[in-house]
Image (cartoon, rainbow over all chains, first blue to last red; front, side, top):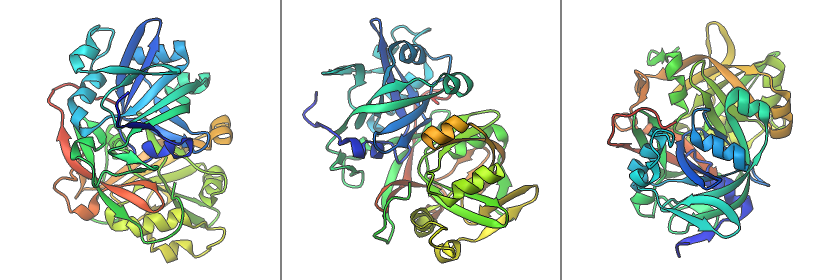
Amino acid sequence: MDSHIAPVAPNHAYRLLNHGPTVLVSARHDGVDNVMAAAWACALDFQPPKLTVVLDKATKTRALVEASGRFAIQIPTAAQLQLTHAVGSRSLAEHPDKLREAGVTLFDVDGHDLPFVAGCSGWLACRLIPEPHNQQAYDLFVGEVVGAWSDTRVFRDGRWYFETADPALRSLHYIAGGKFYAIGEALNADTGEADAA
Amino acid sequence: MDSHIAPVAPNHAYRLLNHGPTVLVSARHDGVDNVMAAAWACALDFQPPKLTVVLDKATKTRALVEASGRFAIQIPTAAQLQLTHAVGSRSLAEHPDKLREAGVTLFDVDGHDLPFVAGCSGWLACRLIPEPHNQQAYDLFVGEVVGAWSDTRVFRDGRWYFETADPALRSLHYIAGGKFYAIGEALNADTGEADAA
C-alpha cells in the first residue's frame, strides 16, 4: 500500500462520502475483478458505518457483489477523470480488457479479499447486507463498512483538505454525458453546533 | 412562483441530485410545515424518477412525511449556507419558530400540497413509496418524483451551468461540524459515450 495511505477511524468513514462524490465500485469473485463508476452512492449510517449504492442489473460488477457478498467503494480524483468515465461507460461483458484499457491499477489490502483501485483519495471495504427486495425492486444495495482508508494528503484526522491539497486530488461529481464537476471552495457556517446530516 | 423558475422534464430530474448536493427536505401535515437539511439524499432511478433520503427518527420532518405521504427535496445554494446549517441543527420540537429564525421563506406550487423553500436552485416534489422495513431498519425513505423545477439561471435544458452562473447559486456539499464545500469547476471527459451513472 502507498505510504500516503492510512486507516480512517470507523466513526469518520461516512465523511468520505458525505459530500456526494461519484465513486468507483469494485468487486471480485472466482478470479474475476471488475470496477465500475457509480454516481448513486450515499452514506446510510454513522456507526457502524453503512452506505447504499445503486447497481444496475446489466452490470458485471453487480453479479460479482451478489456472488461474493463484498464490494469496495472508492473516491476517484480529478486526475482520474478519464479512468472514471471509462469504467462507467464500458461493461466487462463486451470489453474483457476493460480495466487495462481504462488504466486501472489494482492493489490488495491484507484481510480484505477485494480489488482496490490505486490513485483514489479514499477506500471503503464493505460487507453486503443482503436485502433481496431492495436489490430486485430498486437495484439498491446496502453495505456495512468494515474497513476505511484515505490518502492523507487530502483526507486526514477525519476531514477533507481539498482547499489546500493538490487540485488533482479533488473529488468528482458526475452529471451526465461525460460532464463532471470537481468539488470546490470550502464554506464554513457560522455556528458551533453539530452535524446537519 | 419566481419568474426564474421553470419545470424540469421528468427524465432530467435525476440530474438535480446526480452530483451529490446536500438538500433541504420539507413536508406538511395538518397545518404544520417543517424543513430540515439532509446530506444523505441520492437519486435512485431515471424514469419514473425516484430518490432515497435518510430521515432520522428524532426529526419532526420525518413524522410529517410519514403522516402525509409526501415531501419535497430542494437544492440549496451557497447563498443559503447559514439557512441550510440552521435548519439542519435545530429541531422544530425545541424551536417552534425555527423556520422564521433560519430565514426560511416558503412558497406554494399549484397541485402540490407541500411547502417549497424559496431561493433554492432546484425542487423535487415527491410521493412517498412506503417501505416500512427500510424506514424502520435504516431510516431510509424512497420517493417517486412527481414534479421538478429549477432556477433557470443555473439549471436549464437538463443541465447545470455552475461554471457560468453567479457563484452564489452553487450547490452545497456538507461534511460535518458546519463545514461545507461548494461545487467547483466543470471537467469534461474526452468521449462521446453515455452515462457513467
